[in-house]
Length: 313
Figure 1: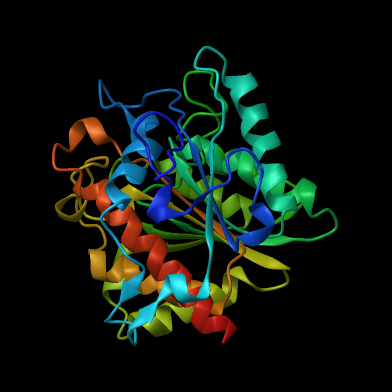
Figure 2: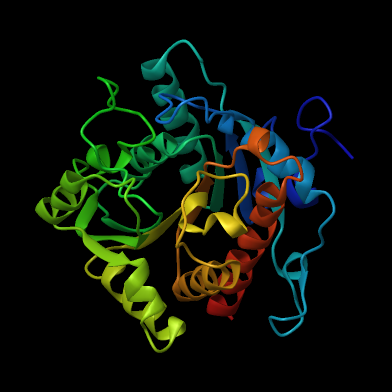
């Protein structure tokens, strides 16, 4: 298999399009953003290794999902792996610019992009690139996370993992009322974060809202309806810690989160209704010797692609 770099294969056996050749033959473009900025809790670190280990873990999977009407994703969609954004560990600003430039190139290909973090700070330059590549259009965002990630800064860093939505709220191409912070829970949020979301006009769906709903598919439909209102497209961003730590040993330590079934159901339902792209962030391989969290990313992406196929059929 043609490697992306070193011993690292393309994600899920995708075609290696890191040189730019063959992109026109693909439907889905994968890329990694191996970036970790400000660390917000002790030595809990290492998510810059996420793209590499997610790709390595994906090598054991097919595109076949017997539980979703026996769909084989690879019969319908061709995947291309563009490799990684060339980040600069010593420079936050330069890295943000490089992510934006790379992502803008991806958006202009008019394929379905899937980005792997890295920390959640990568979502802001991805969204900025989307609004610049598709000028004149408006977008909503479904944000699956334990935390709002909308603090003004982290110790002066405006592009930390805890700040992307503070920057996203400022983008003209994003309709704040169509940002749905979904799965929010736990005391690692700060009181002001909920207030910031409210002031921006964003919606909040907490873990309790999800747990107390009578039908998770109907809840997904309601979330999507709000995210898609008065916009031209909806983006999906997923932080691993929306999952309970029992299902996410390689993610931040947050209890009372979603089960793997709940996350997969939500992702499939959102994608079935139409999303323009997605990212999955904050997998920490160093915390997870068995790499359960990195492995699970393959299933999440396949559920999203299966939903996309179902929605377009």
